[in-house]
Amino acid sequence: MKKIITQAILATALFYLIGSCSVVDQDKNVAEDITKPNIVIIYLDDLGYGDVGTQGATAINTPNMDRLANGGIRFTNGYASSATCTPSRYALLTGTYPWRKANARILPGTAPLLIDTSEWTLPKMLLSQGYHTGIVGKWHLGLGRGNVDWNEHISPGPNEVGFDYSYIMAATQDRVPTVYIENGGVVGLDTSDPILISYEENFEGEPTGKDNPELLTMKWHHGHNASIVNGIPRIGYMKGGESAKWKDEDMADEFLNKAQAYVKAHKEEPFFLYYALQQPHVPRTPHPRFVGATELGPRGDVIAEADWMIGEFLKTLETEGILQNTLVILTSDNGPVLNDGYYDKAVELNGAHQATAGLRGGKYSLFEAGTRVPFFVHWQGMIEPKVSDALVSQIDLMSSLGSLIGLDQRFADSEDLIDVFMGKSDEGRDELILEASSRTAYRCGDWVMIPPYDGPAINDWVNIELGNSSEYLLYDLGNDPGQQTNSANDQPELLSQMIERYKEIVGQHKMNGSQLDLK
Ligand code: NG6
Ligand code: CA
Image (cartoon, rainbow, N blue to C red; front, side):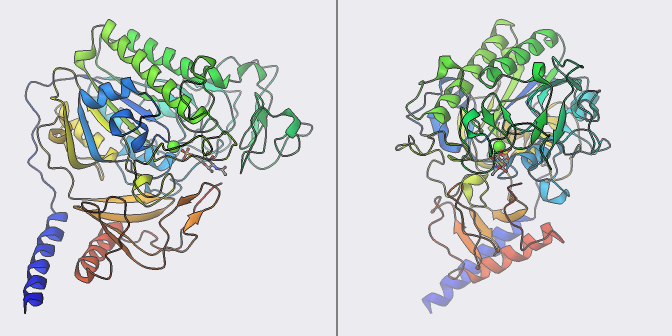
């Protein structure tokens, strides 16, 4: 009898739980005293939830990230939209779930622009409201229309989807072309030494990581065995463009300088800066002044380096007198990975450091560490510091920031959570779809459901559990943040309701068979 009653109570509770998941709160208001602050998104690449001091790291000092975390809202349930880069960045900039978009997966350096130039984007929205908009750092959303001539003006790109100014690397630090591109032009290019790029085949006579190990200063572990630039073997083949090639060790300073210059040039008008740092993605190449900053080797050192850059950047906002008028958001495009394809001692020197903060999985994974990332929102004088457990996603920034500056519009999958981001409410999302390499999972309240997927349970290269299983997985994150107990069998009703709602949202989205894409 007792059991039946308990079940009845549980079923009622589930009804409310699931019921609440389909309700979107439309009554969120913007505080009246907010007009048009500058907005900066500091976006790290592969920074884990536990890589930040405030969130448990002791082997890396991150005083500047801590300053943002402790002086603003620190979200404990803040998510990137995907467990890899391109899809997360696509979602951040469009407010659209990446699994809705064909080809929103890790892109090669030759991929065409993923964002349609007719799509609404975060920078376009801000542009339409009188903001100046800039991006400095990693792009990785494709360029051109499929056959880019790197020696001509490269278009469409960031400048065609809402950025007034762009200073970017095309894809990733480990992919060619290894050059900076400013407003569509390769920086420092000597036209008598034109750039040729291919992801299909090598150019005759060019050394590769595979065939010329003697030329390498960093060794590849998996992938990364094509063209060699600065002694580092990359993904993809490149010939020419010698004078334009970046120096890996200087990249962090280069992006910082450009970000600072952007702020100085636009401090008189409202501006939006998307400052997309390359750390701690591979290849990890700290400037010599950060080598040995930690005992974790290059992975720890580049996080210390990134932290320093963030500190210098904040100082610039301060000395220019605009820190109090600038909303700063810091987050990461996906979770952490130690060995992501080079021998750089990230695994060997890791010691007790927990980049995942004990969450399961990591980059590429549907488990929590794939997408639950550092997520801090800071606005000196306007946001009261606090820790919030509200469920928020980077996808929500677009509608929320629109709402902040007075727009009464919701974009795509982006919810208006401005009151949550401003610390006035802890009512975040009710539900969220998580994504990893085109596979999706469903979170509702504290519960997360991962449907069955083919494919290996672990990716041996990166040594990360991917979340593939022949069974449904169901976890109560409130009591089991490390996802150790699969409750699917104990909670059949909850499971079936969650599956139903999940299917309602993802619709025709391919729910099975997607594999980890490491191309
Ligand atoms: C993978 C790379 C990995 C990294 C990742 C993109 C191999 C074997 N692995 O394909 O090193 O570059 O793509 O990372 O090549 S992301 O953060 O930009 O999504
Ligand atoms: Ca990344």
